[in-house]
Length: 202
Image (tube, rainbow, N blue to C red; front, side, top):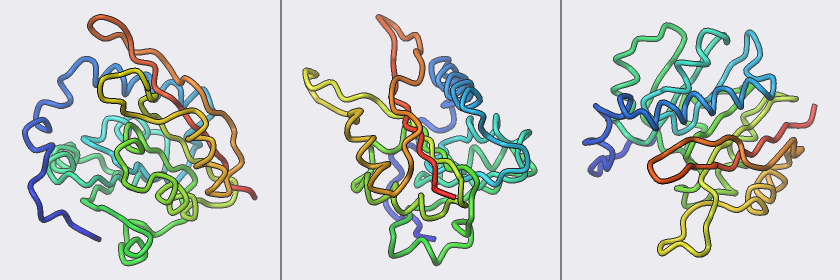
């Protein structure tokens, strides 16, 4: 496991993260959209990559055999660990293709890999999707939710539909769907994250 030795940028936000109503609404909506796709399946092994404080892991845990939850933020993982969810194993990790095989937490196969509000922050988004896709069992599913890029924004940030589709295809996943996953009300409007779903071929 590669551990972060630099200052954790999420350290101040982590303790109060779960109390933010928008954060909780986002997690609820992501969970509902996941269920709409028939996931997670009973008895599944799940990887929650970029788990944060584990709000999505919490929702998945009662329905699956095991959730492996990893995040680069020690503070976020500490909040999740304090919840003591019996079938959730949490760890601090920042995997690359060169390091992932050294971490027992990364040992697959997984029936489902989820990435919630993670991929837009990655230095190598397509490479990371491909790395995670290789951890899927045959027929396993990869799901991501991310901000959609607004090219007219003062500081453009996020992903595009074509970029998500390209990453899934580049990871040799069959594209199940790419589009708006849900709406979350925020002050002055709403958020409409992109949801990308890919399936590993049997």
